[in-house]
Length: 298
Image (cartoon, rainbow, N blue to C red; front, side):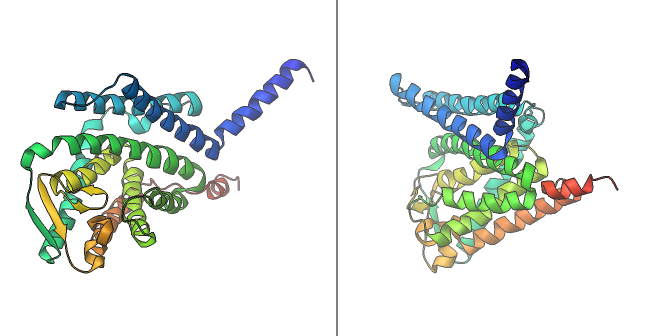
């Protein structure tokens, strides 16, 4: 065996290791963390403080641009393919559709809670309180959408199929929120199922990330910016202010309304609809062993 052949085989082994799903998840996740740390370091070095609406908008746009650039770079350099899940054609309508869906779902949950007599909603800071929560929700929406569905769900799904990837994402999504104030095993299992399944269903149906970004953003923005939900993990200062009283199954207790039975049923109903559309359109991916059997010569 000559030196050239040996080097080629060594390179081939390294490349196969890099392409292993778990390796790709680690590389992409580390890249995402590095991007966030670089932004924080840049803000610290430049002594940047978002004192005005313009500076907050600039900071949010820069953060989103860096996160998207990181993901594009990872996909091109490691997976060596175009990032079709972030194709710009149709991005704006999909982002808007996700935003409207997220706003509608959370507002519907609040309406049911109000009608059931467990939520009190009053006026707070008005329209002036919407700006900061919207920018914060947009940054968080892009970050969460990239990690949970651009990285974890998508890569796991490539090998293990849609349903196993869904189950694992529910676990990871719930675990990621376990450090939230007021969190418990039951509350995080609830949010893992309701949100993890809903966002996955939207991604599977669209096979793109824009609607997922919009959904993430609108959910967080509507909860805090619009309804000003109070309690641990929520600042309680929005256009409105909402307080809850009654049985924990209807109020969510310390964790808030997003972990109630109402939120669970509303989100799972929406998720079921998207999954049915995805099945109808042939967008469910089988695990690799079923694909191998299907393509095996008779």
